[in-house]
Picture 1 (cartoon, rainbow, N blue to C red):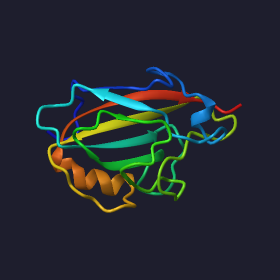
Picture 2 (picture 1 turned 30 degrees about the horizontal axis):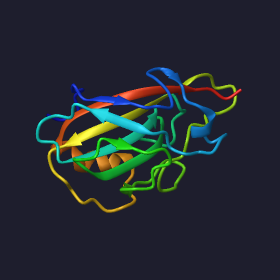
Picture 3 (picture 1 turned 135 degrees about the vertical axis):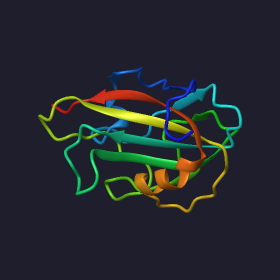
Picture 4 (picture 1 turned 120 degrees about the horizontal axis):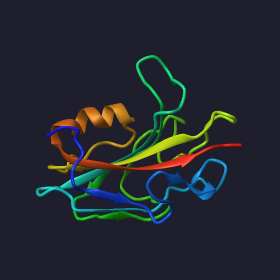
Length: 158
């Protein structure tokens, strides 16, 4: 199926679709990941992956766009939620150069940024190694992606 939106739904108790992300979940606050919950995964789902990406960020380096805030994978197919400040499963590398979550922190005066929290449903548990960046993860999971959807939050620094 590749990367196409599915009937799966993604929600957070911290913010709604196209609503502001609370400061607690940003680089200006506690910098902890928000709780996420998903429902209606496609039939045959065996694993999940989660990504948070800001496409409004200035180019980071040639060949990329935006800024990756979170890459998390090897999430079993039986899981339907992640707690706030999730420390479980396998952390990939964000564009801060760290493993795990790094919250929104756009440049001062850069305006509102949109943060796409993606959940990808996979037809196979892949047992991927830690430290993959978003592009490496997407390359590995694309043949196994049977559904996906996103929750978009916003944040702006004064």
